[in-house]
Length: 441
Image (cartoon, rainbow, N blue to C red):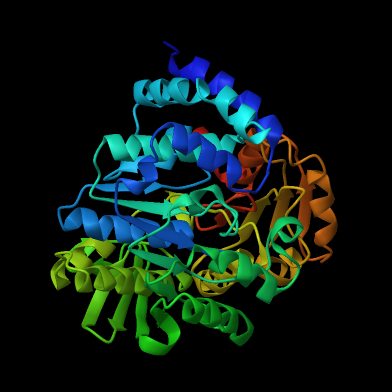
């Protein structure tokens, strides 16, 4: 039997197959194991940004309600085990290795049936379904990897509900060059007769989702039309909410079913308020389907929700914030938060590294006016061969620019430069954020 390290080494060999969208291989692989994806209720979550945060909030609420909640997410920050969690507990190294060994034993048959080997993501998706089915979770929260219709998670035929957080330009090589094209791919997770929730607010994307839902007789719940919310205020370090010091925000939400006043949300950024409303409407939909989830459970679940690497504070003096903003929509959300936070700190030192396949065109527009110094560094990925070109996006003579390839050295330089009241903001890639978290640990 393989150990954890041996399993990882063998898994790495499958990264050479890269991204290869399609359903044949995953259907063949899961068929060998009697289709474990059909053995548990599923909420399928897609969208450009906010998938993981919304999933984390739903998971926290359902755990608070007493359910055994499986969560399959991607990518991971430090360990592959992060992708497979039950009530917040990651899969063990032993179980991970054992399930991978089972799956590796089936790959030759998949190759014979389809003419191709499964990709790494397909192997991990199969592992997720096997793990959660055998652990008999009450519900699986399933995050789409890329797009929707041709993503390997889309083997689920009858989810309890589908959720599309939003649609922005991303992965144009695979999903299309326009918002309607990308929305068409993402709406592939909508299934016949299954409710779908979306926080999309652009007419051109909503039109696609509405037509898809209508064609499939799926109830469409539009967050921006059917709910309202207000951000009552941000809580900075040292401020008191209900007797305790917190970092977070206070929101109030009104849905067609209920009113939630002064809800504490520990996830930072006003965009997380929208994700919280998505989560609330998702669990309210479950209630209509017979799941037992009361008002106080929803409030408690949101108050303890956690999602690493998204406006995550890992140090306070100086303030060090990690955020995995890696596309224009993510950078815009980050800049909105930074504008508000800018008044509470001294200088802002940006440490940034992005992958070659990410759109860096708006980096300077969103971040340059808000920073005093930038250190461009290299994420730990073979998709960051041209990392150094990011320096060309920063042109203001007001900003000090440095280029340091080694992340540990870049972080050390930022920490040495920062005064206690300064902020170090680290962003650009989740690979970068994962490496920084390891360094801090």
